[in-house]
Length: 115
Length: 116
Image 1 (tube, rainbow over the protein chains, first blue to last red):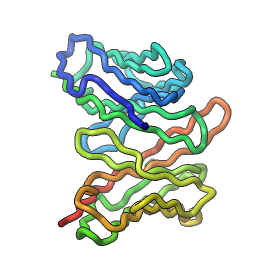
Image 2: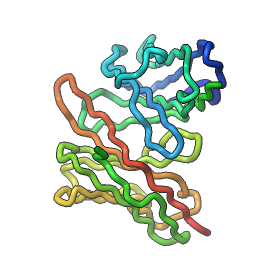
Image 3: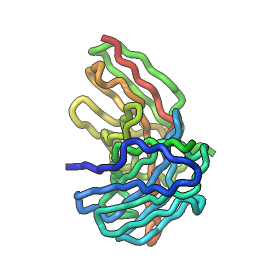
Image 4: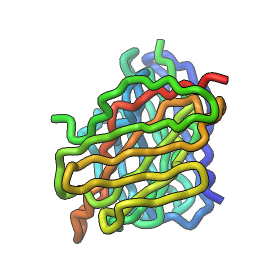
């Protein structure tokens, strides 16, 4: 089983709203990732968690706030977003960070629209 | 600097024939390569991978070839089926060791269309 689930599937929010994206995996993976993907572009890495600790922040604006409550869950808290933040947000997980044969498995994504 | 390149934005193939998707890379530190398939508005689905110690890996209809000297990899799909129509991304990672990580670097993707 290589399933990563994400909720909600679609989200529309105003620029003053606060919302959260959720990601869950039950594969025992210890690395979890947030990516952003714009249309016709490859995924762009945002954050990486390893053993529930933030390992990588790819210079993401503070209006995006990640959280890893436990080894199976990953959240992305959104506040005061801009219309240009509209994109497909993807969660991924892998067994362990830094292994040279580590495969990342992606969730279905949350389609975010900021009005 | 685009370290992973998929020079063909699109590829059209007849059902039953072979599809060959190509990918070139410039970073000689890359040592693990993956192919993902993506349908619109869905997350990428892992297809197949290859380590730099190999030159070929096969899984059912999918075969990935790696030519390290040319810094080139390809994905062969035989026989192609209409359900294979999707965007295909190649990705590469470099094991940096220690507290570093195998960040995935993606190509721009190739749209494969398989006609019945």
